[in-house]
Image (cartoon, rainbow, N blue to C red; front, top):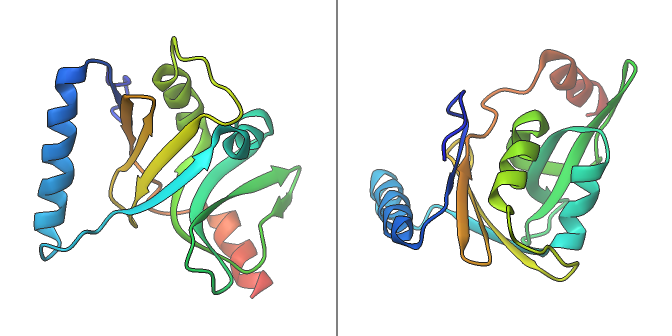
Length: 156
């Protein structure tokens, strides 16, 4: 299923997994035959706060000098913007799009705290999410909203 704005899609049939492998392989060929996607494997309990709290943007990246990816979010309350200090975002996703995407992706899947979620990401190319045999892709934000960019500049 593709959403009406063509921002995300969820592949709902096992035969579509071949399509996913082909798309990811084609992206690798476009970027000098290197494995471009980075992988984040997290339990559902680590993603759940981002789905239940009023985060505006979900970010995937690295804390300080860590080589292990993690999640962070941008929270806006009134005119104040809360951003994790020392977080280097590699890709960002609009939560207005991510929440319906995730709901469709997990349709008829019983999500437990330890359910593994695999996220394949790399800069400004589609983010792939895999959960218990289901796969979906969502377009990342190419540019953060201006007020968030300004907050980043002020905090540095």
